Image 1 (spheres, rainbow over the protein chains, first blue to last red):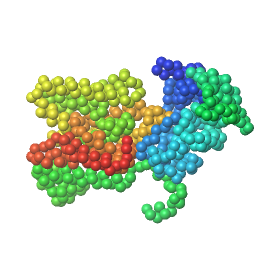
Image 2 (image 1 turned 90 degrees about the vertical axis):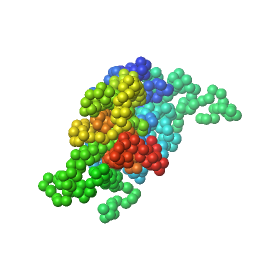
Image 3 (image 1 turned 60 degrees about the vertical axis):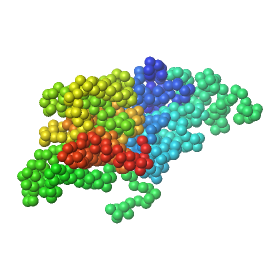
Image 4 (image 1 turned 180 degrees about the horizontal axis):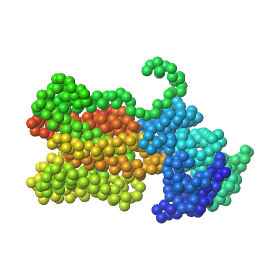
Length: 270
Length: 353
């Protein structure tokens, strides 16, 4: 079953074609990751999917067009983990997670006991229960990212969009967050669409990679098919070595054109 | 209470308490409000006995008729002079504080106040025209109200034309509209120096009333506006993550902004029309509440209404007693008393915007 269909989608921002004729199908319960150089249109495509920017073409969740959905209905279909989420002043972790219940709270009403139960369950799942009364402004980067994830999951939407979810995290926390997303994807049957900078990480976590350049899809498929030295050189202008690790994953190793100061044996990295 | 607390699960899994207005703040602010009202009703050139005033108020309850009320002359002072003025102070103070908090919420800007989008300049120009034209003074509130609403309408029209979705373009449009209207007002004043004093008095703000007429005239606007703003308290919390994120959470930020601005504008224009341009309440009361009690709009809005009402009634009391039998413009008092107090709270608070 296709959870998300993107068909001939284009986005024009300030008279510039940022996304151009992109078509994708994301089967339910799978993880698709958009990669591509800066300005390729990854974030804009995600914003189109979440309904934040207007688009041409068709974007549909389980057959229902996003453009036809009211904002509350849309927020029940797709949840977003933004690239640089705001940390509202004076808001506790619990209240922050409860923001994710907004599409279920009556327009001028307040949260129900059920909303509180959903938030409580997520605080347990993401190990945030002991922090529930803390202000979000006081959390570490990793803790806050878990709170953002909890807020998105509180929307109980079948599709989860992640825009560079690990850009402000160190290696360990980045890994933890992505593992967590993958766990949730399999346990809750979520369909995940993410944009990631780090190609190695992208290859490790996605079922399907899409290389976006200048708003167009130039390659898609498995990590082995998309993360090739030729494609990366051509579209990123980067010299890399692509190595297959013993577990079958693809590792993208950046190379310097000149050896770094003092170290001559560049070949030693593998 | 304590037995219920003991039966709750251990501290490793703390109970989840979503934000709500803390009872002690609610009770405290209402107590202050009642005290301010009683003070405002009893103190004046003709002092009224507190006991008699309370008895008169209790006697308003249908079927209650206690002895020990005021004599006829005192009752007339209470019901024809003091009460309308105190009630008007409550309404205007609550409205300005609510509108200011609402503006700060939708624009996510600590400097926002109810006059941000041109209400003040529009109302000022309207009142100036009405005063210099020499017509009936009863037209001044109507002209001020119309001018205020038109000022904000001009800001919205200009802001939308300039910059689309950004709130900054709207705020900048407000600056331009206010500057333009103020310059027109200054010109009109220069040409009519004989009425300058009266215009100036209006601009500084005052709660002079001829009775209940003003109260009844602005009540519908202020009531509807206050209810609409208070009803948006949770949505204003959602907007604190910014319009884009609020959009992904299912809240159309632009629409919420328009509704809150519309309500705040109508309420402010109504308040300004009968009170002049009372400064300081709209920007400072929400901040004081926020710093003392918490920044959720579920706390800020109701408390700001109560504190704003209290503050203006007390300020008006000061305005009409310190230079008795004369009277200071209440806007002078709000800033003179409010600014040092605000600085004090600001210094003792660790919270920042």
